[in-house]
Image 1 (cartoon, rainbow, N blue to C red):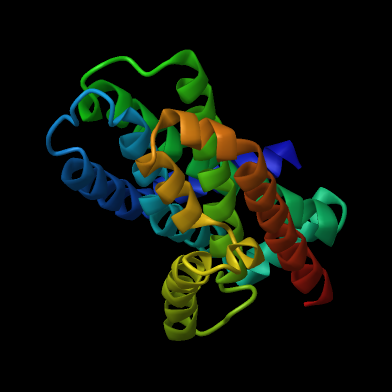
Image 2 (tube, one colour):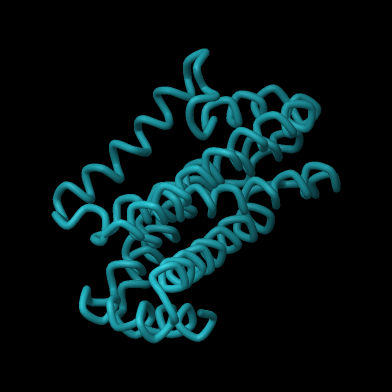
Length: 224
């Protein structure tokens, strides 16, 4: 399974699809962190960057999972010892790619986006949030990949509408029904203390929905 995940990462890079997500990531980071934020705005900068990266991470995960042809994916399932391992290898490869882009976003924010050094508590919270962002991107990208949605047009529309749906639903009192992107941003805008206070609850909701999305993808793939 590990070898298959590595094979898919190498194929993703050699197919040059990785550069699509890389260019989008660099463009977004250049816009979001075009100028350093003043002292005291560290929480807002770090959280906004993590939230805005989600659709690009989903694009990266979708592209990686779509790199392998359908017949090759079937052969991989046989060689890996079953559909479950093949699905797990794909998710592992997709999450690894998303984690690399998320790490790039976090480093850019820390080096070029803020003026002062964030407190240790905020830094740990930001690190966990970028991991959750990578998980959310992986789940959304997997659910809109070709193995689930064969039509490229429907796949891309579903990815964009899925992210917009997250934003709209999380801006209401029913934010717990999705990954709470807007509550994350509101808590960060209220200050570091408010963000750290709301962190356990928002992180639990985010993790739960990411795991539900990944489990749904696994179930859909095992049935296909």
